[in-house]
Structures are given as C-alpha cells and as structure tokens.
Length: 318
Image 1 (cartoon, rainbow, N blue to C red):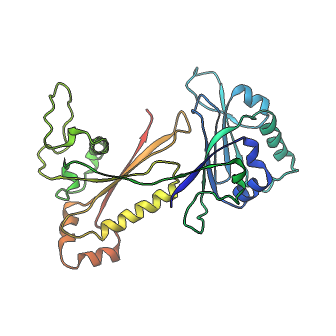
Image 2: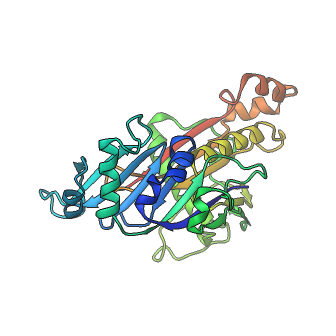
Image 3: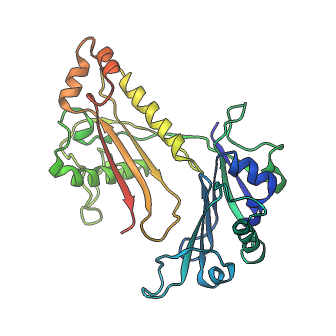
C-alpha cells in the first residue's frame, strides 16, 4: 500500500538521536518541506543529503558553507543561497566540531517549525510505507496519507494514427513535433476535453486545435489511472516495468500501448525538471509480427525492445 506522512517539525529534529540514527544513518527516507522555491525557506532530504535554500540574511547568520543560486530577483544581486549537507559522512556525529556547528545553526537561526512530507522506503510487514506508532517520527504526531488510484473511463476519443499500430515509429526528423502533438493530445484526454471527441464541432474561431491524425477512424474509450501524493521515483520505475510486462502479455487482437506522465514538486527556480511523459507504442512491422502465431512467446524471451517503441520527453520551465 503506497503512502506517506505529513508532519510539522523543526530542522533541529532531524539531528536528534533516535530520528537521526534510525532514518538518516541506518534507514532510507525522503523528505520535502513546505515553501516556494526562490521565495520561502525550502528544505529537502534524499539519500542522506540535506539541501537548504535560504535568503542571504539567514545564510550569513547560520555560518554554514553554501553557494549563491539564481532567483527571480535582480540578476546581479546574490540574494539566495543553497547549502548541501551530507549527513551520512562518518564525521557527521554528535561531538564533532563541524556537526555541532550545524546543530547550533538549526537551534539558533533556522528555528521555525515547518510542515514536511515524509516517505520511508522501508516497507512495513503489512505492505505499507506509512509510519507506525513505535517509530521516532510518532512523537511529532504525523498524519498518514494513502495514495489510492482514481480510475476514470473516458468518453470515446479519436486515436492519433501513431498509437494504433498502423504506422512505423516516428522518424527522427519528426520526433519533436510529434511529441509535442501527442503531449497536447494526452493532456486533453486527461482533462476529458470535448476537443478530442469525434462528435466535436467547435467553431475554429474559438479553438484552433486539431487532432494529430484528423483522418483517423479509430475511436475508443481510454482507462486513466491517477495517483496524487509524495511518490518516489522507485515506485514509478516499478509501475513502468509492470505496464511493460502487461503490454507484452496483451492479446494480439489490439496492439497495446500506454502513456505515463509524472508531475514533480518544484524545488528550484531554474534548471528544474517539472515532470516527464513516457509513451510506449507498437510500430507497423511489430504489430504485424505480434499477430503471427507463436510470436508472443518469442517476444517474451527476447524482451520488449524489438516489439515496442518508447518515446520520453521532459517538461521543463522555459
């Protein structure tokens, strides 16, 4: 069962004995604080690496080593700094001079309690990833959040030609344009927009959108699954592998395809990936090969690369 916790605690709590030893030194957790990048204090923790994004006045008072980062303010003014601390280093122990400096900064400068999203990679005996009452986090009274999938069946929509299995994989020269078209189409499908329905007759003056394959006669409904929450990339990787396996085992009557889109939490103002989309589809030759008797067994043995075309694109700020 996929889940995470929401908890309010100060930065100094991360360095306390039980929490520090259980989750950071010996365990594997992921945390993200509230805050807007470039505006508020923003903290994140992953693989024992703690990143602090703070304004210049707090940076000078804290006395920790960091570097200036770009922000939305004046171009040549250094107003915000990022500090990265590897809390798994052997020197990160109570009593060590460098570590005590961090403890002092957290207790005297960065003292405000903030709301965190907390994910523990350790799977509990019941199969969940939420915290229990016996763990160090329990003293801060976390709120457990369960990520349940929301299943939606769309109204019949016009399928673009590249997704029906009747065309060859996109040529490199058209890849970028086709990816933009497919990204727009997928977003409209998720929004259940009438623009992708075969019965749509919107006035061109109000909407200039056209289907990537206007002449396509393939009309079907789609099943959309949506998860919302603090979800790690390892879980998404497992989901992709499951989808690939299911598509490979799909019956030969309809060439299967899937699309997986992810929206990331924004942690930086610049040079930050907002998300990505993976599209898996069958080309014409692969679709015909999959229809031949015994081809399913040969595809399972050889893997999905020979029978499927994957396209990935990232969503980034301009």
